[in-house]
Image (cartoon, rainbow, N blue to C red; front, side, top):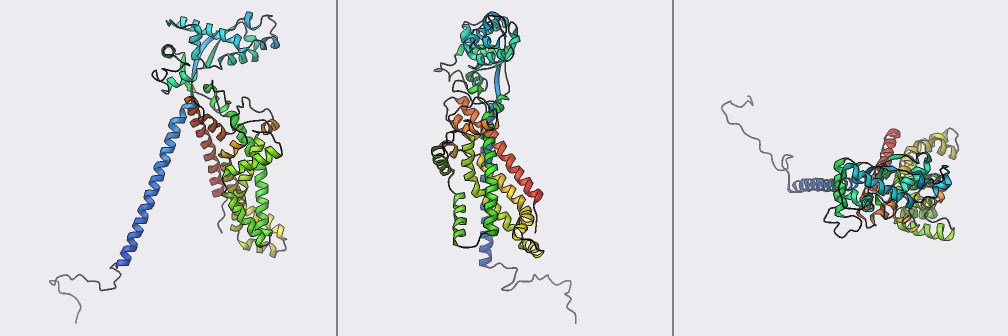
Length: 453
């Protein structure tokens, strides 16, 4: 006998019987369909999130990159000794007596000579022609002369900032139609701008002063920069780092390693978790009441901003530090105690070094969160203050009124001139660069020192 099938016999496909694994019953089909729907929902959610992120990044870059370019006007200015140093002795005190009003006529004359040399015919008066310059031009010229009085009596080529309207015209932010009711610029001045652009006397280029400069008044949006507010944020972060890190780590070590497990510590832990979810403006109100109204610390000072942000950052650092301490296996503690180490020695010599990467990562993320906070700073007066000069010492940086990057962006965004709005978007780019850098450092440190048990 043999089981071999005759070659001429037709092939028979085996029919799975009831309960075979090859047949999906109704429940299995329903479960698989639910899984496919869940995957589809996830892909749709990720796609929507990516589209929103791309839209956000596109909007920020398209509206903010213009702030890093500025329009400059090149003219040669004669600095007559008869007006700037009447005594001819180059005495700095005598030179300082000449105000910006004394330099404005020099700019007008220089502009008139410039247009004449280029063969530009215009019916405007010299004062109107010089109106395409920034209102800060006389002060820029005066500062240059005071810094180097030897230039008096010579003719020097200067690059002055163009006015915000002229800058907006060359960036397509201002059009001839939009200035119909604008008293700050005229069509004739725009015609002159076109001729000067063709002659190469007006050009757009990278504006380093936007990164290193200070804020300006409403009349000079083209001169506004982020530099001083960046220093304000730096001093605030130093205060946060100096206070939040040691206090947060010490509190975490005590709660995790030494505190008795009773209802009191349970209440403390619950409240720390709740504080992490409290809106940041509540910390601003607390800082206003305690640090300014009660302790009479200076308003708008980075020291006060740093103290407020310390209160806001502490729960984040405590929670991340406790999580890092918990991640260290108990066998490390048991081994240390087993060779005769005290409880404190086991924690500080063995547990804490192993938890340090996680603590460092949580601290950096907490600092990044504090760097971008705006609401607490509004209540302690770090908006509406124009810091025109950078601090000259550490004490000055901590105690003198200043602004911070998010507060500066908020201040620009609420001003009426569109030039400030463009700078607000540019400020967001700078702030995002800082935040992305800090988060990248946190990721690198976590991967570099991560321990797997």
